[in-house]
Image (cartoon, rainbow over all chains, first blue to last red; front, side, top):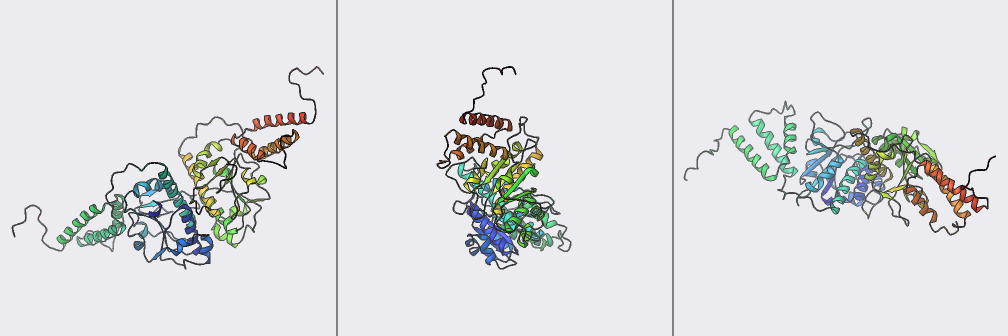
Length: 258
Length: 258
């Protein structure tokens, strides 16, 4: 279970925090680290010092340019967020995250990303809206920003506790899972949805009014299966054809003989 | 509740870890920090940097020479320990620590110390034997040593969750608590006990055979009330008098008239 949990750090500024993250991960039995557009050299003396023997996780980390690339294959993307945003998103506690893990990782293709933002500014709204849920570490409201590696430690700790509990108890009684849509499939769907809404004159990117954010939230909350997403994309394709003045497909009558 | 939880760092070598501890504490709403014989200047540029705005906790920290001084007034002393020792001690998980807090802090004079050892060697056996219980953060057995400030974060996080849960639910149904013996009172008792055992020829400090450690463990496990400890000390005093050849107190007959 733990090997299918990825820690994603976006725009990290301090190599020491990358080292501290590696140490916290290895302490808790996590191994999959991705760095998105780090704003520092990831592997420095500070990294090695704070990693304290876990720097192999930094050597093995994948460094990519965008969040998309880091989480494309993930079936659940959870963003660490200290702030409440203009558009409230499904919010879970670290403990609830742990409790959800066994079911979330029941399918053989399931993979989870825990995404952490910049030391100074956290995750952007665009990044937060790419997450299925946000996780908030309960903190002193007057001083709520945890050190990056320390925040990773808290979530990794809850993941480890959930894993240990699973070792002790039989597998949860879950229905055989249909494969969920991956992050990449969802993003293709959202891009298709936006094109279609523009085409039908419902959406004006110059006056977005959080329309796409609201649709993202709704869709991500439902955790679509791959099959369901294919259906939705079929609907979009049909809608686009309508908007482009093509002949609508007639479902009312059988096809005429060729 | 949180204001009666003290973090005690023994023999810390790196000022950054003191700063990181202050940040983790302030993040979780803790404020009482004690430093025992630090092996570094506690307040340096590294401290300020890692404290990230919480350095007032380091300014306000009490620095003392011995663990005794740091925890004298505490009614529960819990030592963070990664290792299992030759003499097993009551062991709790961080979660169990949180669950016990409301009851442990029910009495108005109750106070808890969470004790953390040196970066390189942890707590000594003598220090561990001064604790009522040991707390172990479940970690990768192949890489189990957490960064000091990170370990403080995990325990402080569990304390905060317990406090938040208490805010939401009515006070637990506990019996009106008798004041528990403080650490200092317990140590006076142990010193008295050892003197007495030597006096009666039961204990040879040159061949200790863990006798005192076993008696400590037994006594600490029972969480004696102050009143109970007074009774035990009365027994020791009577025993000492016996050993010194003084006339035993005769409880069988009323005192003769003066």
